[in-house]
Length: 316
Length: 316
Image 1 (cartoon, each protein chain N blue to C red):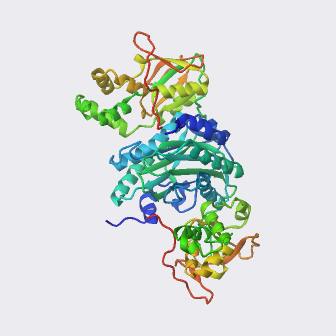
Image 2: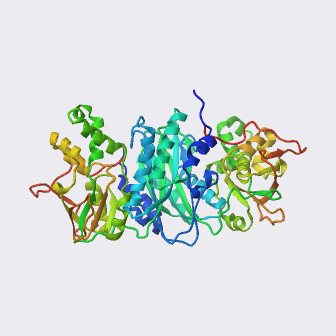
Image 3: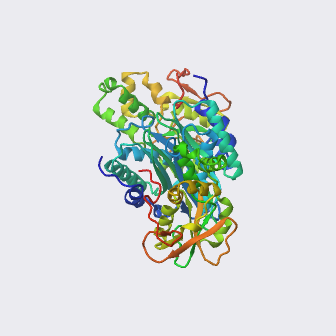
């Protein structure tokens, strides 16, 4: 076996350079964030090889996905990141090169999103690579899930279903081969690397009555937002924005529309706001919040309710 | 297989009751902590079955250990807990009963230490149980690792080495059988369940120039404190407080003194303070901070420097 960093060395060489001032050089027991007049927003997500990503995905992409899914949660709440803590359980076969690439990916994103590393813990595991990231942010106004009211319209950012289709393509290479190379590459990239919509924070703070990120699938996540808001919703499925690549996939297999509407990992923002609100480019209205306690209804082109086999992604 | 909670159900039934107001009922994307005039202190520790605990340890004890090691970090920094986030990767064979007992243990500690659950993430894993907890606290004065100065005395709370000896006994049942049942039970308990020294927060805030919790072994942790403080230390090993049970074990095998001084999992507090400081009961002076960059020296009864095979616990 080639030589590997000691626990102290890997922190000092790979992770300390990503640390912000609150991380105290990663040489203390804890991070120290200065007091602020704004509330602190905190979120955590754990990713496990073989569950949330493929063990042989590029290490930089694994690190970035683990960070970005958390930044996505902050964005949905209208919170700007202030830093993150990283727990890393490394399987027996890690190498210095693998870990250096992982840290490089993390460093690039920490810089790009102004979210420095402020603490962490590294351990060995007899199992698969596991990464838990806790992201901390500050919000001038926290946008809850629970504020949607009948009369609000339902909006979504970006395009929906790309990541779920990207995952489906990985699992069905024969089907994938029928798609154009551009579509394959685009969908695969959307699965591999989410883009947290921090750019939408000002819009959400100013206009959203309720918001969440779409991580477990549009249909199931809208159901959660409605439950938290004690309301229901009606969505016109043809209004749900699909990428050109997703449309190509759905044209080949119309059943994939359900995958797009119920599959996870979009990391776009779903929110409710006044229907008179002028949505920024790339944000579209897909339906309305309505009174009642029923799960949201998705209507097809003929205004017939769509019935999904499974509303959203679940681990169990 | 018996029926198991869905992801939503286990959150609603087992974890939401442990949630504090900042957790928003565990039905939002993130926790929301009100603004405070005090800085926020954040720390994370990840525990993996087979590495940090035994998979067949009582689930309540596993949960409590995972929380307490984090509260111990807060205590060492003079920070009172405000809440914690839990990442839980569950192996394939979890049962509702196991998880209910885990949540019960967590609930008891959350109440006892005034540290409510404020967020989390639950996932399946093909590997061993893994738990990552991020604890957040607030500190009127943050006690760093880096403030020790030559002339300060070195103090430690409680007794040292019990947990490392408890682990050694588990691994060597033949040796364990030579100990009194009281000593066995005491040392085993100290390994299984640390007691975070939140009671020492006022003392540390008022008097400590530097502090950390003893998690990887007294010798190695003191070396870290000295490195952070750019100083060295001299410890008189006979002054290091050993429990009656630890003394019994060391009497049977004098080599276990090294285990006690270098083994991990004590979760007592090591700190530097003015030698004139009046230490509270259960806190003893074990040596002095001195100038220089050498690793701390431990002197035996004859004032001869002790040489340890291994300074502290390391995962790699």
